Image 1 (tube, rainbow over the protein chains, first blue to last red):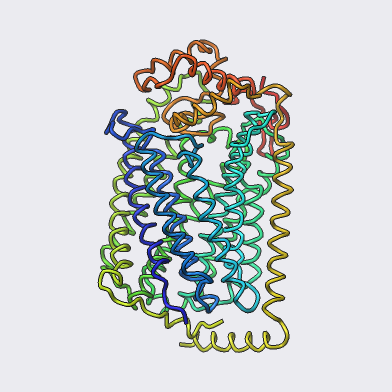
Image 2 (tube, each protein chain N blue to C red; image 1 turned 90 degrees about the vertical axis):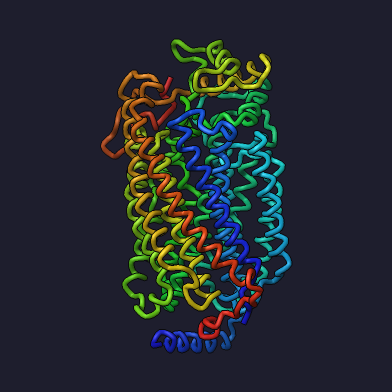
Length: 456
Length: 169
């Protein structure tokens, strides 16, 4: 059986570092919104992209590290090319430094979420191509039909590459360039990119669930494949609710309304089903990972309600362009994705150390600060969005006047951001310390014994 | 413990099934075919979006050479960190979709703010000619439609009538 790959662990460690830095710049940006001019060395125009890119990096690093970590165990063979995994890690290290450097120097040039100079996007595409190649060469060695998580990962890695290239299609000049098509294609690509990395994260959630519970049927069930199919439909068409107010073609908007957010319902159903059938003894062996998965379940329900509401066009009229969209993004990236990614990390920590391997009480404190802070942070954003949306549409007040009314909610958002940051810091310190343990103590990384019983 | 036993039984039956003729290469072909179908669906959707995704009249929202330079300047200065277009972008400053055509504002107003800043927004380090390119870019947006939509008729099924056409002039 393959040993745990050190490179995969380093992906997780650098992912955790990205999260901590991303949370720091997010906190700075939140306070700069209520105290303009705060810490002018890194103004908001820099802190925002730093926050966004680092948080995206957290999701990528851990989702991809998770694929590199679990795939050999699931297939029963090592990665096709461990060297390519190391090259991938090296490229992302170089890329990370280049992106941070360009933001700090105020060198932009890209579009929202990828504000760094477009040449660096080429490096992301090359590194992602390595992942696609290595993934398929490894996954194809497995025997038997693929469970849903392998399909999710396969779709995620392929479509991320395709839609990432599409997100840069603005670089190719067109004679009939038009702002509406430009914006529509941009959000099509972004929606599909998000759908692609969600495929990686949800696939990871299924793997961790399967390995905690020992129940392999779910990932091969009709529900799991229905979830996969709906996730793919969403990847194709679910993005258009972001552009309801844009004068895009009506078919796009109606289709998006129809597709809506159905995948969340199925995910919630699957997680609930899994929880009820979890074996108590096995759950207690992975108590931290199980807690994070429970939290992601709660956040699926909270965000499901919000997502369904804001995908109704008549409500979207009032919520579009307001902080409610940010609340939805935070609920998804922190509430759902981050909880799943921490579940994968602490499950890996259990495997590396043979037990929880870290100070559980600090992790629990971090868990509660993160979740408690996030609830109030999320509610503050919804409050701010409701005020902004209502007065923007129903009054003649200026933007500045509306922002004065929104300010108390933004103060609350920034204050709860501090609690969130403390929680993330506790989790990040303990997760990275535990993951780095085998490196720091020069101890060999152990072979995964559970794989022997799990042999496919 | 009972789970481990179950797992062992499942694995045995799976291995048994596989030994009866379902080869790895067949699985590989099958999986490649499905991936290709998915990529094909994506290609169709991409083609539709690229060719028929807008409802604006010809010429409106078009990017002139000046506006294209302005688009790059908008990105170089990361204006999207603070500003929105059609409600998409940052939350610190106002939406700029109609700034060059809104009552009480206009191209000169936009140019002045770009060059000299406000109490909250720093002056951008651009030449007057570059400010002109940025204004041309913003004007392309203004010509494409109106945002936010203040005149709307809601329908019982949760949509609004303006979704049907470009009725936002």
